[in-house]
Every structure is written in structure tokens, then in C-alpha cells.
Length: 238
Picture 1: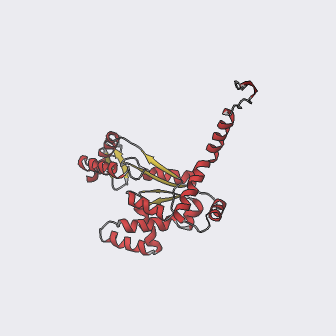
Picture 2: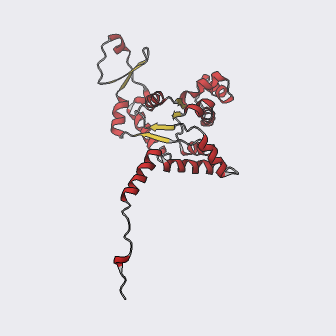
């Protein structure tokens, strides 16, 4: 006996429904929301996962942006623009020690002592200052955009372990040829603190006479910096 397919109900066309669901998910960041909740649970490991998620959802969500890019991409300037346009706290890891030292934090005072002695801030101190800043009431209330940290995978893992999870990661991409052109062509007026490029027209003769090229912008140094970035960055992206 042959089955009577004509008697079976025909499946409805779900294309419109699926498209509507996809649009809704995209507009409201549904998948990102669940991913963030899962990450938070795995990091904090609360005794009451459901209650923890409910409390987390009840908190005001703020942007938490990590921004990084190869030398010459002006990550600091881009971070400043992003922070200003979205009313976020700009966290500049390289200069964080200044505010931390002024506030009298243990890490800040230790970092200032190193800088005053002509030495670099250690990665351990940098990590402590960044974590303290991102955990501050100001950053929790307004959100933040961070650049200059992390620079290696171990630092990124430390942030995740501490429950500091970005909502967005922005990588500024540039090819080596363009980066090399920008960096080796830089000229700086240290008196006016203005950066020019070799192709720029400098109308002030005194400023033009003051222009110098820093050793770090020499070709050999630039090639080494780019190579280090290309080596260290891939493990950060995931």
C-alpha cells in the first residue's frame, strides 16, 4: 500500500520566522549575552549559578573594550576618541602608574620608585595596577577602554582568571610596509611636543630646525618592533 503523501500536512515556510529570530538576536546581542554569562560563571564559579546570573542580569551593563594594534596604528589616540565618544574611562596602561602613585597605592608607589630610578615598570606591577583600575568604582559604573595591556597571552589569562572580561576587543590592523613607512618617517619637535612626518610641510623654520628622529624609529628598530608584535599578538586574539 503506497503512503498518501497528499494527506500529510505540508511543513510551513519557516524562512520568515528564522530571519526574524536572527534579526532579533543580532539587535539585542542575545548570543553575546549568553557567552558573557557563561564566561562569568566559569571564572567566578558561584555556589548558586542561577541566582548569580539573575543578579548579573540586574546590573547595568557597561562597555568594556580592549584595544590593541601594531606600532604606528596610534592605539592611544583611537582609545581616547572611543572613550570620549562613548563616555568611557580611558585606561592607558603605560601611564597608569602616574595616577596610581598620586593615589598612594602600593603598586603605584613601587612603580614610581622604578621610574624615578630610570627603570621600567615591571610586568607584575603593571598587571596589578591595571587590575586595580578596572575593578574601581569608576570603571564599573562607566565602562572602560583599555590599551597597552595585555601584551602577552599570560597577562590576558590573568585578567580572565580575575573575572575581568571585555565585551569587545578591537584590533587595529596595518601591514608591515605601511607601518614601516609611518614610523621611519616620523620627526618630532620635542619643544612643542608635535609629531610630523617626513612629507609634511613645516612652515615654522625654528620648529623645522628642532625636528629629530628618535632612535626607536630607525629602520632596524622598527623592523624588530614589528616582528615582536607579530610574534606576541596571535595568542592574544582568541
